[in-house]
Length: 144
Image 1 (cartoon, helix red, strand yellow):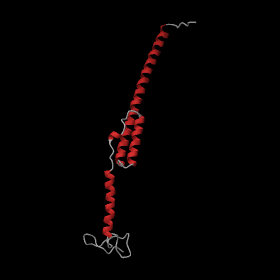
Image 2 (image 1 turned 180 degrees about the vertical axis):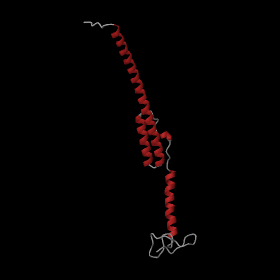
Image 3 (image 1 turned 135 degrees about the horizontal axis):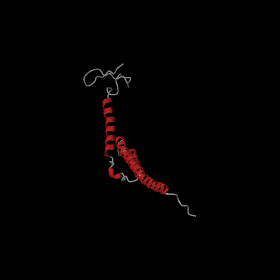
Image 4 (image 1 turned 60 degrees about the vertical axis):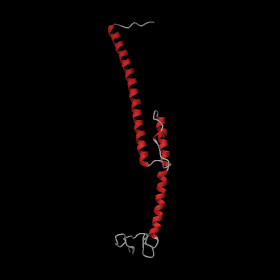
């Protein structure tokens, strides 16, 4: 059985949940609207306190130079989320940027190693080519 109250348009209230013995929902029972407004104000006050908390600044994150810096930055973001200084969306954005830096750092390290190995390979290839020319030129003398 629906609530016996009416909504703001004057139509019958359709609330079926939280019916009380008097036939009215929480909003339409005597004093119900004031009670709901008071609870709503408490929620609004809590939200206002959350937004008044100290914000998070980019300067709090360390400059990313090493992988240890990236780990420290992720931990700083974790603490900021848990202390409600940044939202989950902001934390996701920060984590994503740190993740991209780690990938770029890894790619740079890989390219540096590939460059070093290429130089070593070129040196060995040149050495092998020199030895081949010596073999073609004449027999090797074994020194005892």
